[in-house]
Structures are given as C-alpha cells and as structure tokens.
Image (tube, rainbow, N blue to C red; front, top):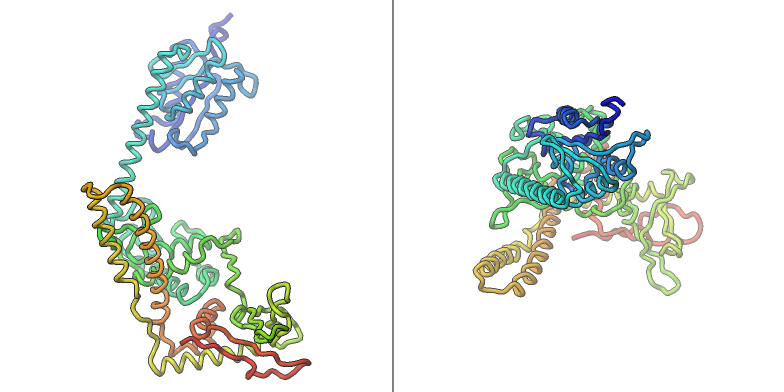
Length: 493
C-alpha cells in the first residue's frame, strides 16, 4: 500500500473578508499553508471549501461553503462520495468567530470517531474536553475583539458626523471627488429637481427628463426611482447629515452643518423631507413608483364633490373620479361613484370642459391674490414650545446624571418629551413645505401652466393651494348643455 493511500483525507477551509485582510493572507495563501501543514502531518487535502468576503462574526451572514462542510462532516463524505476524516485551517478564527458556530463545527467533526483537526501550528484533539474548551474560549475572545472593533468604528463614524466630515466611499452625485466642492452641472440638476418636487412635480417626470438629457449616476448607470429619491432626500443637499437614520444634532438640538457646499437651503430640504415622509408606507411598483391612491392622473379627481341631494335630503358630497367616455370631447368625464362605492352615482360632467373652467378660475384667483398682497405664510407657531421642551429635556438629563431624580421618573418623562419633540419637528417640516411653496412667484403662473412646463402633479398642487373643493350641482335629466354656473368653487382663504 502506498503512502498516498495511507494518508488521511481531509478538507481545507479558507475565508478572507474585510476584517481579516489586514494579516496579508489571501484565500489562495491560506490554502497553500494548509496544504503544507497537511503534507507535514501526512494528511491529504481532497477538497477546498472557500467563503470569500463573508464575515464569520455576523449572525445574519450565511457562509455557503462552511455550511456545506458541516454537512459533509456529518455524513463523512463529499457529494462525489470521497471519504473525509478531518479539517485543516490556517487559524481557528478563520473558521468561526461565534460560539454557536464553533459548537456546531465540533459536533459535526466529532460525530464519528477518529476525525482529525489542525491549524498552521499543528494538530488538535477536539475529542479532548480541555482542548475543546480552550477553542471555545478563543472564539469568545475573538468575538469580544470583533465587538471592540465595531464599537470603535461606530464611534469613529459618529465623531466624523458630529464634526461634519464626509464619510468614505465614492463621491456623491453633485460633488467632486473631494466630496466638498460642488460639481456645477450635477448640483444644478439636484437643486432644480428639489424645487420641482416641492412644486408638485412627480419623480417619474424628473426621471424621464434626466434620461432624455442623458444624465447618468456617478457609476454611469441610468437613474432609477429609488436612487433619485434617496439623492433628493439626503440631508447632505442642504449641508446636514444623517447618522443611523437621524439628523446629527449638537448638544442644543441644532443640526450639525457639514464642511461641504450645500445645493439647496435647509428649508427646501425640510420641505422634501415632509413630502417623502408623508408617502412612507404606501405601496410601490417594482421600479419603486409610489402607488398612492391620493394622487390621481386627472386634474380634478378627488377635488370635485358631488352636490346632488340624496333621498335623506342631504348632500352626497362624494369625491368624483374620472372615467373614460369617448362621447365627450375630451374623451373622459367626471362621475360620482355608485352607492356601493360611497356615492350616489347620479352626477356626471364633461371632463375636458370642467378642467377648462376650473383652470381659468384658479389662474384668475391666483393672479388676483398676487396683485393684491402676494403669497405669505406666517412664522411657525411651535418654535417656542420646541425650544422650551429641548431646554427642559437637557435640564432633566443633567439632574438624572447628578442622581437628583430617579430612573422611574426620568425615563417615562423623557420618552414623553422625545415623542412631543418629534411631533413638533415633523410639524416644522410641514410648515417649511408650505412656506417654500408660498414663496414661489405667481406672476408667470399662466405662462408656465400652458407652456407644458408643469405636469399633472404640479397643476394639482396649485389647484389644491387655491381650492378646498369644487361642488358639482346636478344638471337635471337629459343631455343639457354644459353650464359652468353649476360648478361652485370653495376657495381657500
């Protein structure tokens, strides 16, 4: 019998990831060292298991080859029938960094008698309880080191965020490679997109315009709905930064200003935040397009209200919706839903003619308002309460740290204040949206409306600013001529 036939068949396991690359060993290097160790021990490597760029320290990471190796050890052979009698690794922390994984490995290896295990220092008897305990203790120490590194990394990220220092990685769209200086053409696109969304334009319309203009991401790819939304929603555009999903604030609760040049003002970003936050949780298509039932495709869907009286002598008041009808000049009509859908089903109007009349009425009203006083939105009324709560929270925190108040008093009260502060900040963002929209010039509204520069979403936003609703009064039986007097606008102050 030859020496090759007498050699013990073992498998080699290697893993390389970001947290292990610092030792200079790549996967091929690890397998080469394993081969040398196996030859020195008189073993033969019959298969190599490799998990590239997969951390052994994270519970949610699945290592396919590690799992396949455990399965092979359990049955005693590989998928092709080749018998295996052991495992060889460079060092044990390449194999496992979590106690649970180490216990699973030892159980699989020792499932049968006579199995062998070795690292670059030599063989180890895992059937010996002391050796197994020492290995488990080493895994615990390794896990502690990983947690220390993760904590240091989190503290470093937080410290950089508080100092307003850009993070690593590729440059963001809109900035140059230093992540501080604006890229003029890209920054102008971002700024215009932010203002368009505030004005009511849909992300889909912006995407189509960017694609027609050949605008690409920094990776040279086509812009998608999600990537555009994240770019506009990133507080970096106004000079702020988020960390773990929250704005980075100083001790006084004021957002920390980064060292990079902003694209838009904080108020504009707060308006964007209010818009996107309101859409959170709504269903989306595969491409990320929001399926918001509150955003119809027609100008006055949901704005028109049925004014017909029902059998109880009360007004129907159901929101009317658009329905295709080739008999009308515009190809559609506005109808009151059926009784089963919450309406009366007894009112319908020519869609195109209603749109034409309401459009002219809204434009005239906006022009009148602009001529008289100009659009104004008063200051936000929650500023004093927000500042009072933040000051109270800081004072209570200091008292708790000085042991002047108990945990039972501090934590429930602090949670209530945090909830109220969060509500106030959300209201502040909604007010910023109203303020931003109110500052738009209205003297060219008619030209912009009919030039094709506004899409349906933007036009609906303008109509909503001018009107609460339009009540559609019944026209009687038969096909009567269109009568605009039966449309009753309900204007906003």
